[in-house]
Amino acid sequence: AMLYAGLHAFGFSRKQCREVIKALASVGAQIQSSSHILTIDRTHIYIDPISKAKSIIAFDYKDVQQLSFGQYEFTFKVCTQAAHLKEKNFAYFPIHKLNSTLTLRHWQDGDSFKPYGLDAHSQTLKKYFTDQKIDLRSKQDIPLLLNGHDIIWVVHYRTHHDYAINPDEGPFLEVHCEKVNG
Image (cartoon, rainbow, N blue to C red; front, side, top):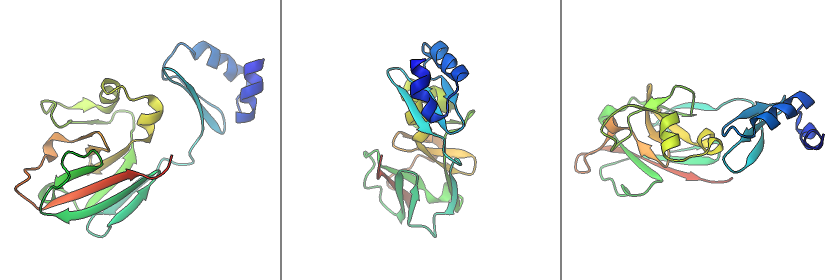
């Protein structure tokens, strides 16, 4: 009854409250009302409004210098030197391997990529996120940069093995990403 009193304001029914109680031992369980989603994580329970639509932005990197995506601000620039290779907010990609149209979106079930430095084996993002100990709420927020169907950057984490650069051979696309709020 107390749980229902607290969750009713977020659109959860009595039946859904019973489901929450049953799911408390299940890390990653999610229960959705008409307006909110409740996520049970390792140490917390989160209640978030359901976003109206998952954002997907396709753009021509030659025409765009700056782009907002959710809580993130991206800048794109063609350069001949990779000046920020060790910084997690920057990624570099060889121009000759890129389509002119790139895509930004969030993680979807079944996504996989070849993480740079992990023996060029393809890995599901679900497994990658688990190995990195990234909680469910955070992994749903992480932007992905795609070239065609290839996830070329799990933003702030890892680039795709096949898009590795040789720092002495440009030009490169430099992508910089900052979280601006949240």
